[in-house]
Image 1 (cartoon, rainbow, N blue to C red):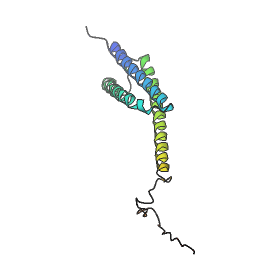
Image 2: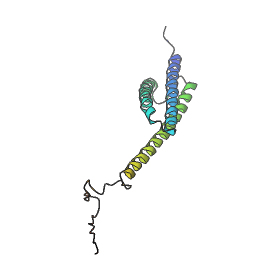
Image 3: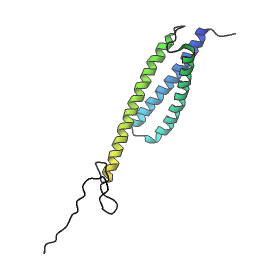
Image 4: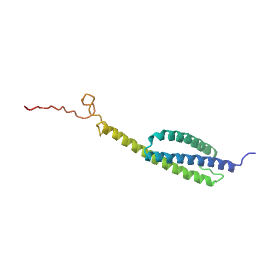
Length: 146
């Protein structure tokens, strides 16, 4: 017996909502990892996020194929929930991305300091000679007074 259009819409929106909720939970876990500097946990979370994102994308393509940009008929209260959660997921993802970018910049800066170059430019080569593009190179002449 064929399902009604309403039942198909509800099932699709329920799947979208479930996947978005799972994705949001992963983003919260990722955020917690970033706060406690547990970088070793991030690759597994990224893999799970990529899998869920592919599933969410497939569901959205299916929704678009069936209903276009606005699910006209039948209206579903789940659609509002899907839209609201999608906005929350986008914001959480943006926040985590900003944190990761800040951590990368901080790490790169720390590495440059450890390399003895806080400006991020290699001024001297392995034998102390000036590097091309590092600005004017001045030879130091030591005068020893007797």
